[in-house]
Image 1: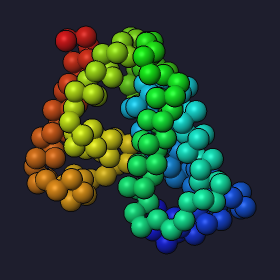
Image 2 (image 1 turned 180 degrees about the horizontal axis):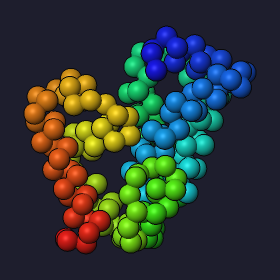
Image 3 (image 1 turned 135 degrees about the vertical axis):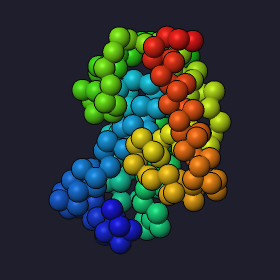
Image 4 (image 1 turned 180 degrees about the vertical axis):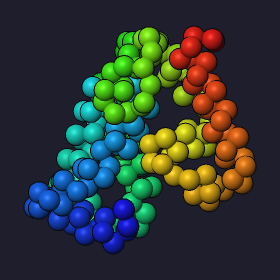
Length: 175
């Protein structure tokens, strides 16, 4: 979504259902993916999604220069706040089938350990986490990501592939 269109919809989101719906349709899957990457559970990710859209609806958000980056940041920060408030120290298992049903990830296999998944994500440096999220949740191209993280396109691609390999090992229980 273009910057001008996003800001027009954002300005009207609290009073215009069509504007709010347009923002929701454009960003709900992206927000849910970012939230899931932090909270590790699809139902909690949906709670975070609701909190993000309450913020958008409230009218407190003003002009945004880069909508995708802003949505990523507000989603991540809201998810981190949710995690700290509700989940810190909690353990559970997540079914990837529930993720596929929730539109977060196009995968389906046996349940895996949330602790293993969170450990894998936590083991990534901040740049790798950003690359993975922007590619999977926001459909950024490698050149777009490279420009934002200030690495070469080749380096971004290599780091992305490394992240996917690590995630695959966790999902297959390869250790």
